Structures are given as structure tokens and as C-alpha cells.
Amino acid sequence: MNEANSKNGFIVVDKEPGWTSHDVVARTRKKLNTRKVGHSGTLDPPATGVLILGVGRATRLLKYITDLPKRYTATMVLGTETTTLDAEGDITNVQDIHGTCLEDLQESSTRFMGEILQTPPMVSAVKVDGKRLYEIAREGREVERKPRLIQIYELSIEETSKKDVYRIHVACGSGTYIRSLVSDIAQDAGTIAHVGDLRRNSIGSFDESDANPIEELCVLSMVEGLRDYPQIVVGEQEASLIRVGKVFEKDYLDLQGLPEPWVFADHLGNLLAVYKQHKGGTIKPDVVIPSDN
Image (cartoon, rainbow, N blue to C red; front, top):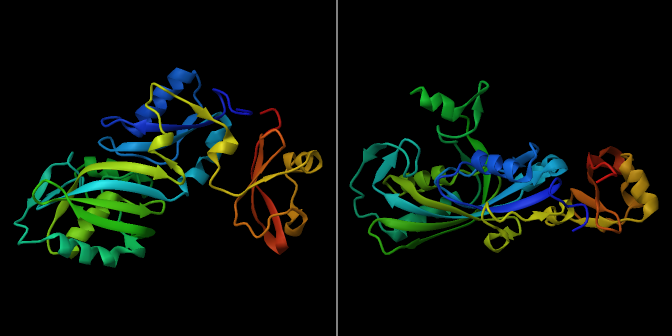
């Protein structure tokens, strides 16, 4: 572990049910004795699974983790709708499912593949007029929400041992609400549903095998945390220029047609900067990490 220490790096947590993402951050701050901890994407309190934290200078890099695709597994409980679209909410509607079966759900799910528009649930952290939706929901109000474009890469539904409960597997892009997806698929099939349990199986290449309980924190280096992006190791001459934020001609560095963003490290494995495409065939730093890392 090079530049990673208890003050700079990434932590892959397997979140327990009942914890908010903020609870995990607060616990980590206490364990590491630092205020500079953040997370890459909220998991609802009843949800479990992969949650990636950034510590120290890695908090500036969390946006790249947030942008990675994610995988989830959830249960669809047919015939009941709740205020939160999951098992924690108050029941708002109960319906006879009218013989809805697995094939109906699978057929409906085909219409939710690829790029789709999704309306965020009222109980979510999305802001409307400067206020988070869950705060508005607590006031007993519902407001109009703008649908957002999301990406569904893979989607499958299977039976479980329980009547009217199905399991859904989803691979999706950033910003997808599984609660809304489950509700929308059920409505398309002519019924209603809420999420029973929800688990995030992976973020990018980080899956459950990489995740540890909150009491067993393991700090990864900043370079290791960005392993899903193209990584280029440079010599000391280029490293000294990158450290001061130099804008390069794209052809100057050996990018070999690799997609952005580009992660640059020195020969010791220390993160130097993350670069993105710039105007006129150049690339410029999106984030530069100070040399005393």
C-alpha cells in the first residue's frame, strides 16, 4: 500500500441493515479519527451491500466511483404499495394481483431495458427547489418530480419460495432507484409492488468479496480505488508536469485510444491526477493530488 494510509484512500464496506449511509460515514470518522470521510452513493437504511467510502484526499475522487455501474438484487412483493416503495413505509394500497405471474413480470421488464426515463421516489435525496424530497415527504406533501434518464444494462426476474414474491436482478447506471423500477414494472404488468429486501452486489469491479463489515475497515490506495479506469504510469519528467496541472497534447501521452477519464500514477504507484478530454485535442487535469501524498 503506497500512498494509502488511514488518512487517504478508499474503503469498501458491506453495509448492515438498519444503518444509514451517514451512520457508516460517522462510524468510520470515529474509528479513523478524521472528519474527512464521504461515501459514493446512498444505500437506504434497510438495504445491505457494497458501499464505498473515500477518506482524506480520496473524497475528491468519489465522483468517479459514483459514476460506475452497479448491480442489485431485490425482492418484489406484489399486491402491496407503500409510501416509500419498500417494506419500511406505510401501506397506501392493497390490490388483488389478478393472477399476475412470472411471465407477465418478465414480459413487462423488457420495456425497462436500455435508456429509460425514471421518476425519483418522494422518499429520496433528490433536491427540488433546494430541498430534499424526503424532507418534503416528511411534511406530508408530494411535489412534481422531473423524470431522469437512467441506464438499465441487465434485468432478470425469477420466482422465490414465497407466494407473490419475486426476485429481481439489476445491472444499472448511476442514479437508478430500484424501488421505483420495481414499482414501475409491477404497474406495467397490471399490479402494484414494493421492495422487500434490497442488496447492492457491486459497484464497478468492487463486489461483495471486496467488502468488509464496518468493524473490519481496510483502506485501499487511491490508485487501487480507481482501478475501473484506464491507468497510465509515467516517468518522473511527466510526473513533475502532471503535479502542477499541465495541459497536454493528447498525442504526447500514450493513451492508446483508452476512454476517459485517465488515471495517472508515478512508478511507485502514487496517484498523481485524473485527466479528462479538453478542447483542441488536449487533455487537462480534472483532479490533481498534491505530491506529499
